[in-house]
Image (tube, rainbow over the protein chains, first blue to last red):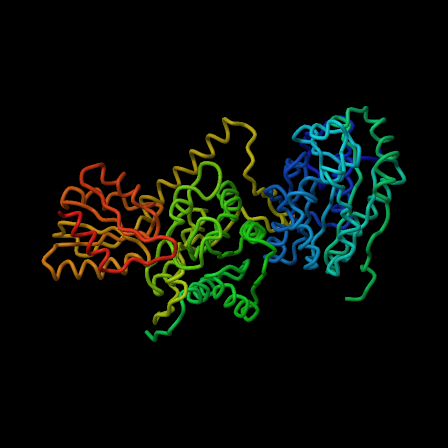
Length: 249
Length: 350
């Protein structure tokens, strides 16, 4: 019998804690496939965030550290500087990375820290029950923007890839989405590149993954994918924002 | 042994390097800057990392990462910066990671002032982060002790998997004294099987974590950690007793204030007052037994602090109301004179 589909070795057999229809599972799988294909699991240390992915330390089969809210890039810096041969990645949501951890994110990029960041942007704080996030879009209704995000009082969302692309230290940043098979394939390629860059010592690489939160968006999984396409993609255009990975070291 | 003349901040840095600390993460703040500056010069020469972080918070989280990866790591700061690091101190404790932290105290609250102070006693000993945990706190009172307890700090941190703080102040950080730089043989465990270094496919994965969603489990973990703290209390509590055998009054002071107090004890003795000095060297664990023992013999205590009075609460607790406890203090960056301490000694005896 031929095996055509199985769990990547870089994922443990522990059932994830994500809601039905949530795209974290897909993104976990893409990271794990990458670790398998590049044969990195044994030398990788992952940093789990605070947020829905807090328990990621149970799901990835590599060594893991659970960090304080927003501090994953600083913790990753410490791990990487201690043992530069390790492959170090963080897996963070939008509240973690683009609000409380903005300084840690920006300065890890500015330093050109040779780490990989998987940034899951679903425009909402998921684990705490659906509050307005730094990436919540104008007009978007959340628990703490019940009349829709009013930019006159709540300001504007942070475009992470655009911001980090302006920093000299950023080697690679790309925004992808996991709403469809073609886009999932592109997301996989981007994630693989972000890890390969680290292997090659190219420096700071970040992949922003537009993701859904059916539970807190109040939509079915399928409708959530539509909402992502109709609302998030126009506001957060997919694409490569910076890529120095082809440059010679 | 040959001695070298060194500034306190630099002496701590050199001792840390000699102790095998190759990872320093800092952020500028007065009056600790010489420590980071020394590291920035020294680390590249020993193949280590000096990294100036974007904030105190980032610096302590980098320490968390490096400590989790199994290397000796430290950070230093001064009072307002240590307050920022309290998040990291709590996570270090929750993750059972060894780390060394230096607080070169300045005056507060708020931006306060840059002159020496001891007003972070509460923060160091009672708080400095959320949740049930302790930080081991050393209070050296000379440059030699700053060196000696830096070595001890790394060993104790690794032996018990705790954070050890060197609580100094602007006087000790800035002043120079001759020191013997001798690295004692380390007593720390050689292996760190819990560290995240990559499984290399040779062992089950390691997780460094402070999250326990089950209250039953978290209670057990916290109680087990406090059993370790009890061991630290038994093994590591340190204090110096100076002329306490026949003392009718005991001065209690730590760090820079203890040096002034020692002069005051001599002045009192010259006037026929049998004064002594109890100098806590560890502030947590606090040498309560030494205070309690003295409480049966002395008429009173005078606590000398460069704060509005913080350690005095621990002295009162330890003395169990057996004898009066007086406070001699200066605050805001002011330093008490031996004459002021002497006056306090005479007052409490009256």
